[in-house]
Image 1 (cartoon, one colour):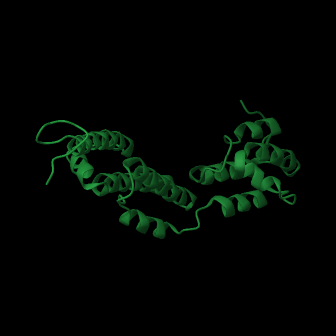
Image 2 (cartoon, one colour):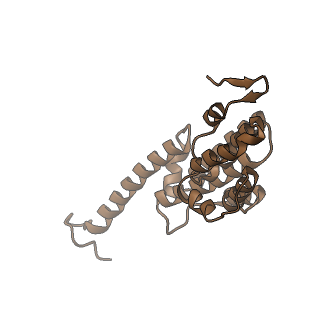
Image 3 (cartoon, one colour):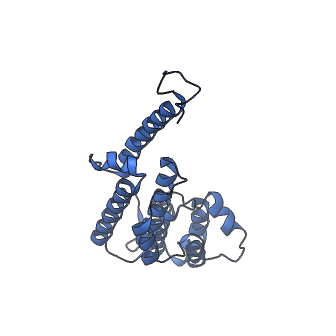
Length: 212
């Protein structure tokens, strides 16, 4: 457990334990990471901020670490957090992202996996924008649930028509379950198409089709 050196002072060891898990550039985790580090620095005394900052820098990994490592003047947490926001906060507004979500659909050249990935990427951007907005926990949870439901509905109702028709007759708790069902349906449709294309309807043999 954390021990307080004095009534209003925490030890450096305690503050380090309060730091969040590492941040690797995932936009979805940006707000949570910054919020938790902000809270730790609010507890720190002035003499603790320099060594604490070193530990925070070590918490930033991957590409995010490389991007801040080239800046030698990042000597405060405030400067680092502003740089992280500049790099990883989506540049599109939340309204723009929501408009994009409301119009996204399965493109003719896409397979199910590609459409699903586009939806997931857009969903992550929107959730990241919501996390980075200043709203209370109750509002936040409601918005996250709403966006996940909209994403699921876009996948169900705006996939390829043949796949969407199947999905509409079933209920799914989340988009991952709908995706699994859509993949299975896509494979079945491909087999049906292949069978109809390569087998002659007159003689039943393969390698040719019925002449018109």
